[in-house]
Image (cartoon, rainbow over all chains, first blue to last red; front, side, top):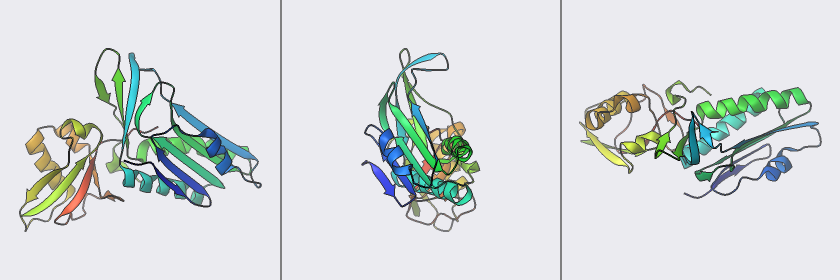
Length: 154
Length: 82
């Protein structure tokens, strides 16, 4: 698959197999009317459930994942006091320490940005069609459990 | 017969890694559970299949939605991005 992106005036969404760009996230969400920017950066960890993780791979549905990311971004902008939002997620093989996800939001004041950034990560984990396959030092690979999309209401 | 093509994602790739086509009687009004039942009869793994949702390329398919003949859908196990 090829990298995917959607860029609108107040949201930017990226699905990429290249290094995710923290500066791009900050550049996009910063705004003259915003005094607060909150950026969450998720990275690939070398352990999970007492096993040594050597790498992982994300499986994504190119069109549906982007459509659901767009639904999430619009929902945040509709319901919250957020001026801009940036959602970027990796797909394919990722090594330890690689950036797997960036969520950035901007708002007039800090409480909204802190709170929405945290809740948006939770929403992403529960509703966006992305699947994680870990590779271990002593075992082959395992698909991780997650949230049932039949219960997804976004 | 009506034909439904199913694209696998995530842990479903352990059952089949390439898209498969399933056939159903033309007169059958197909819903998500009918497709799950057929997949369970083929792959004998109700744990993975019953936990899955279905989608088109753009949106999730609700349980009571009729799935039309010659539709290309995706089967989506529980998600864990981030």
